[in-house]
Length: 210
Ligand code: DGP
Ligand code: NA
Ligand code: NA
Image (cartoon, rainbow, N blue to C red; front, side, top):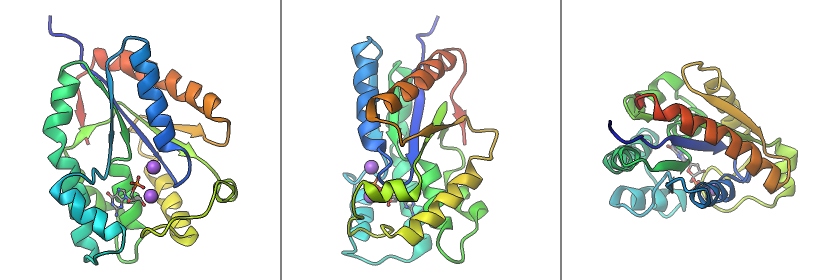
């Protein structure tokens, strides 16, 4: 019998919802309980494509909007062989943003429909679980000022949040909404609970495709 695959677990959410902190805590908790787990994040700014994206986000370069959308997608695709290899080895991947950020952020720009935005990501490994860290804009504002990167304005983030709401209506994706206004440990408990269920379920189901 083949060994059991790892689960593909994604955290999405608006800025300052605590995604990165929670991804790290989840990986630590899984590892501490003897379950192999690794963290990934998109965009992965370390690759050649990722460096183009990073310069764009830092406003050191300007790129045409369709072009940058395709670069974000290419950045996910270039990591697929590694992701599949790790999942096959039984490693659970905890991913900070994925294709849903891709659709939500680009379709929040004028002149883009969600349908077009989804196309380049069709066929990517499908997450076994996508947790949306929900935080209302007022509470997010209390957590600090926006940085200086592209997209970090409250008007744009509001529109991104609306796009995520539409994406969460897709019943073919295993979405869970997490109340990110709770304290870090309570949010972690919710995330861990859903993740353990997803890890068990993934052992008996093949990896899907978006
Ligand atoms: P982060 O490193 O998690 O702060 O993400 C960088 C920024 O890029 C953040 O504002 C979200 C945005 N982003 C992430 N993925 C995509 C994508 O695929 N397309 C677009 N247009 N933006 C994205
Ligand atoms: Na950011
Ligand atoms: Na983050």
